[in-house]
Amino acid sequence: MDTIDEACQRTVEALEKQERPTAFFATIDMMTIGIYSEINQCGMQIPQDISVVGFDDIFVTKHMIPPLTTYHAPMGEIAENAVKMLSELIEKIQ
Image 1: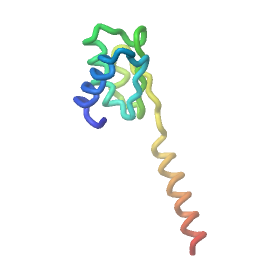
Image 2 (image 1 turned 180 degrees about the vertical axis):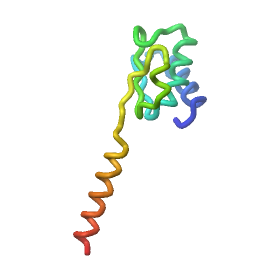
Image 3 (image 1 turned 90 degrees about the vertical axis):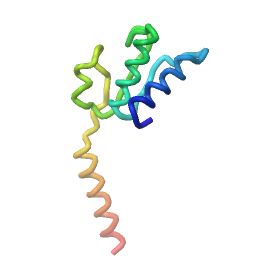
Image 4 (image 1 turned 120 degrees about the vertical axis):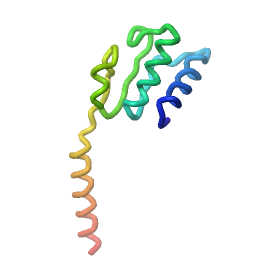
């Protein structure tokens, strides 16, 4: 999924199944906007009826009702470690 509209569509598809999911996980928080919307339109409540978790902790999530549970990935630290590891690999090759 990479658009809010696609998240809406996939959420509807999942909620129409005989065995509904108990939770949704979005790989980026923007997708949770569509997920929240469709869950609400189905008359369900977050988190009482279904759980939603996001990833990347964008500022908007604090203003969602209820606030989104989201993972804050330390991107700067991850990038720094990746560059360090790559540099070490290059040094070993030379």
